[in-house]
Amino acid sequence: MDRGIWAIWYDIAPADINDYLDWFHRVHIPEKLSRPGYRWAAHYRCGHGGRAKGYIALFGGDNTQTFLNPSPGQLAKKQGAETRRFIGMRINAAAAILAEEARVDGPEAAKRDHGETTAPVIQIGHYNAPSPAVEDDLGGWYAQERFPLLKTLPGCVGARKLLATVGVYKHAILHEFSSIEEREHHFGPHEAQRDDPQTWMGRVVPQLQHAPYSPAIGTRLWPAV
Image (cartoon, rainbow, N blue to C red; front, side, top):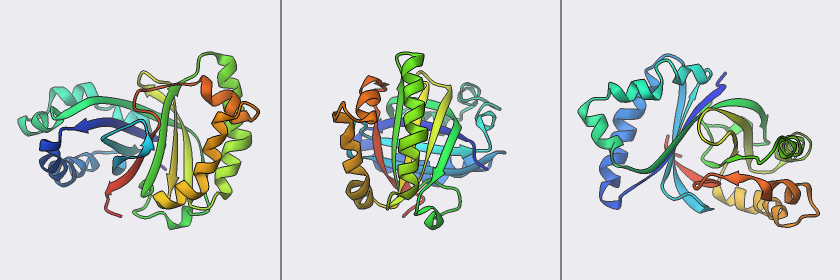
């Protein structure tokens, strides 16, 4: 089972998008998937709300060691000229290697396409908590309220709570949905609770320190939906 994710957030200048996407989907992803332990890949365009603009690339692996043998730093030293040229097109790039802490399947889990690949729509948060006490409260909220909700939420394919093995921000949460319409209709109203301090979500979530690109909502470009 896939227990590790290598996540990369970035933007691309408009003039470079077509060439970059052709290379990334036709050359780079297949090359990555040929390596031992890599199980799936997905590429998303951000938008539809959230703070991120640009793209998110996700690679799923057996565990985090899949992405550390060799590590990203070691891979960078061995890149060919073509790879360096296209990777150099990325703007404001950030990355994390994430270990799965917990997961839940939603009602749409049986409709997951392309094997273990993440769903057509994702929402991913990447953040730090200011203290162990907030982490305690956050963990309780996920275990007792948020994950039980997602298990029965229409349109939800699943969710994963993740911890960073490599990355500036310690925590991540990956939500998966069957479509942007399903997310907005069924999940959006629950997200509004963050503005109500009388709710558990409204007590804990405003204390989190999000990355500049978090939360991000993405629609999948590859594999095509």
